[in-house]
Image (cartoon, rainbow over all chains, first blue to last red; front, side, top):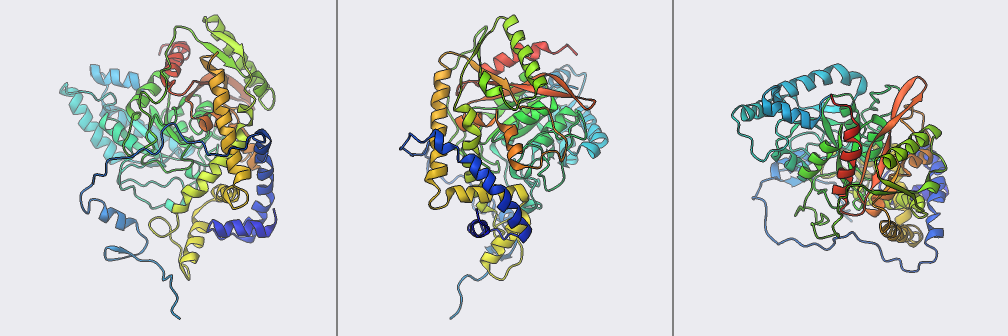
Length: 97
Length: 475
């Protein structure tokens, strides 16, 4: 696993890494990946890769409103790093031409 | 030390009150916690108020359907308690206040339990030593130079130091059972789906379950019975007819996977395990050797499935809606800096690993194969449970290690070898003390793990009460 690959993973994961961290993960991630690769030997004879789901899945709930209007609004707003009135404020994502 | 059962008996006959109990435990916390560091916060005002209310109810003889009335509990800090800080022991949630109660918290509250404080843990439950907390490590009360295990290390240390009669943890790959083993306690991991995950910080959603850390199996059952049951807020919670009934029996047949235990287990741990096996035979149980070849490979599959789920679940911590937010030149910069500053080393390692195993071109080779292994492990278990009632092995290969001793991630991961297959397959398991070993002048407890089929929770409690609780000398 090359340094560029670690940088690529960090970009995908939205984490900026220091040079020191790139060195650290560049050393131990390949070892961990080599270890976990042993699963391919065990599952080599199985072509069917359908993911296993739990005992219960696709459980639906009645489509009922269970909370009162504004019941959580203030508490949620309080946790937001940046707000404007009752809205969350974020950085501009569209650039002006 | 007092059990929940003893506290309730005292409250009921009037020889002790919830107010006295909470006052006494807060006093012990003040004395012991500066060196143990099990707690991230204590809720003194709220706990004393709740204790005063509970005391009045006992005095008025007004206790109906509240099996935990007045019982103080410590709660791992990845479980949401409304209006209290829920940090997950991470810098990224250092100032985050929970806006609702987790389902298990609401149920414990209704049952009369009192929350005395939140406990330390490995950041977002990633680790087996509580050294990965952003707020410093917890120390093992049996030897302060050693780790209490993890990730529910604060919960385990709090109970082991008698700072609280019982605590709640979460178990994704052994995070309740392994600290129970290191701290000399009972630790319980329920059948996947037996307990609601609503209001738990998600780590590995197909693996996570909350469970108690207690002094006795009877106490663990008491807490589990309150917390478990179908919850509309968690669609994976099971109903009584999800799995076939697993009955209790006067005596049981245990299977021991001998070849699984031949490498890496400390010789004195194995000796104590063998003595435990002999004691089971002497008590009329049957013990047979079994083979679980896929179980032995579980650790590799776990370190694919878990990081994959971690990388997805932790995507929500982005510095936008809540938690730590770094300043940046644009939105992407805010994400990358907030996560860089907010997450610790092990969390980043697992996110990167999970991102790798899920990335284009690698998904089939890793995640797809790991899920196949997982399915085959379930089949192997189902076959095994046709001939044995429970599977028996040490909870961990060693006793508690020294703080700072484990520096290589892979060797740290190997501590989980006996516990992770249980989460991968979703079956229930219990750990309780089987004896002590000596390390550098310290006497350290080690635990034994019993594993039952899906929905075999009652069987584990039945066996645990018969085998462990009755072995405790009357206090």
